[in-house]
Amino acid sequence: MKIRKSIAWVGTALLALGAFAGTFTVRAAEKPDSEAVTQLLSQARNMAFQLKDDADTMQTFTGMKVSWATHRDAMAQIKEHVNALAKEVNQLKAMREEASPWQRTVIDRIDPFMDELGGYSEAVLESLNKHPERLGTPEYNEYLNANADYASDLASMIADFVDYGRTKDRLENLTYKLEVPSR
Image (tube, rainbow, N blue to C red; front, side):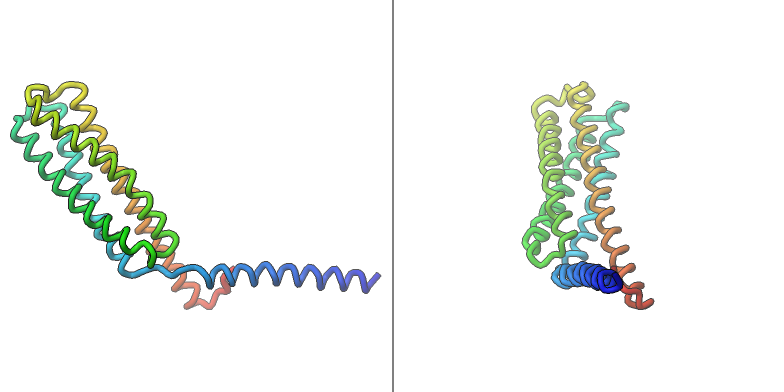
């Protein structure tokens, strides 16, 4: 009876040890965060918040009597920020292979937002250029609202990932400092 218990205990211990060894192997195989990607993500976050502020400002035009020129100027600034952010995103894509898993995730998730922002920005510009008399129509206002929503969502998403990276680094540093075994 004692032998069975001992064998069961040894088997359980080996199983647990194997699970921990697997965890360490997976951890060791994880790619570390790229400092360059982290820096680009921080810059992209800042640009996305500029874009959000511009889109929010333009969204306020829906309830005001604002001239066509004011709309055009605000939209030009939005387009400038979208283009600058697109360049930043292209740099991130070029560095994707050196990025850690969480960094790759954020790089991949930016594209759909950029596509939508580009589409709605073009719709606003087209409406401004072809039909300046239609400022304030429900369709035009929907474009402005959608632009503001996507810009806000993009800025929040990038900021959340940047915060995640900082928190992850801080936790890893504290784990090392306090000599806490990982898993």
